[in-house]
Image 1 (cartoon, helix red, strand yellow):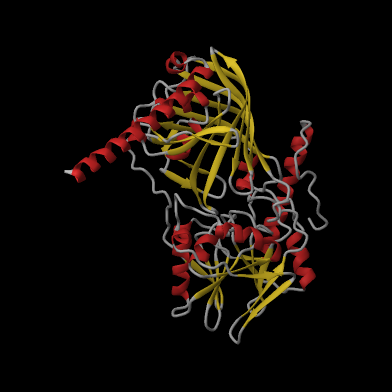
Image 2: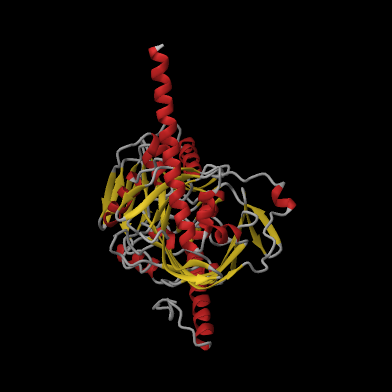
Length: 531
């Protein structure tokens, strides 16, 4: 009987604590609603349209010219920007036109093409012209993270949408706590998404924080700060949004508001039938792995452009530009090219997140990373960045980070293969890049030096300059990026020269066209003594 009484007492105490916690959290949310314009007004608003402009940090800060945390950031402009919050139907639309504010070698980087991203409750889809395509629940690349969870979090970046979500009966709230002069609470939404919201002394939302899987860092935490509140349609709304990452405090998205439109006529954002009925794409798609022979003991994998180099008792890879599952498949495939030999090393050409995309998977499989000395710190940060909520293979089973630095030249050699790893001197895109050269086979392996893209070339002399400096006799290259439809895999030097020459000419034509309009674009004029 005493035991039963004790159990009842503990149960009652826990229930009271739970009720008290929810009560204090609900009071905090109610105070925020009142500060934003009153609970009745917050609940009554049907839709909000934000108009403005912004800038993204290129590749989440992983696109700087070097891996140094002091290297200058590169940005992508987001103009003609709209955010449509259809609160009445639980939908969200993200509209913007992007232009990279640095020399980008593919035409799409400067096209100002419309990005039209929509979330209809639990269905994410993109609209390109009159074509709507369903998006995976999770979608990661070095350039962006996307999917249902990310779009829902971007929707809740709006304080009104955030407070309405926190007021939903199905939302679980933690007890409020104090931190750095702000009052914080954690929330789990009915669909399962988790976030933390902070409130200032005036009860207005100060920031919202959430996490998402990330191909290079395992997981990344976003914090969007709300600043400069103004009054629109009886509501207080911020005129500045600043989203930072937990990695290096990267200023990922700076969003500036021109105006808000409240309860106006908006487009129907419902997912069309062909989208709703389409199967949800896989989060990390894996393509069947294929390869072509380059020379004796050297192959190029088509998926991601990895070059496989066979030594007497092991295999070395040059580059692993792929999501973790594709990287895992590529490593497994490489073992089949030289059976009974382990894959032990990965040469990463440079610090950019696309070229280092498979690094965490490589470390998880025990590979030693080889790259320019200046990239070691960045790669170590990538390999050790925590991923507690979305653990990948490396987070589930941590491995020691092993690194071999390259200063000017590193020779890897045994009695069956010699491979030189060389500093790609004076490259304005990536000063700490390396490329590889197999002298017996007269094969070079490179990423972004000669073959970053087909359309433009803004550092045309760099590849030939390095070949001359090191006195290399190259007959063909195995590129990371397959950028030329007519020559999709291995290129002869004649084809490389033709590609670089054409890209230089196209870049100069673009520069001239824009200059005639009075537009001074980064990268113009194109500097070259060879082309």
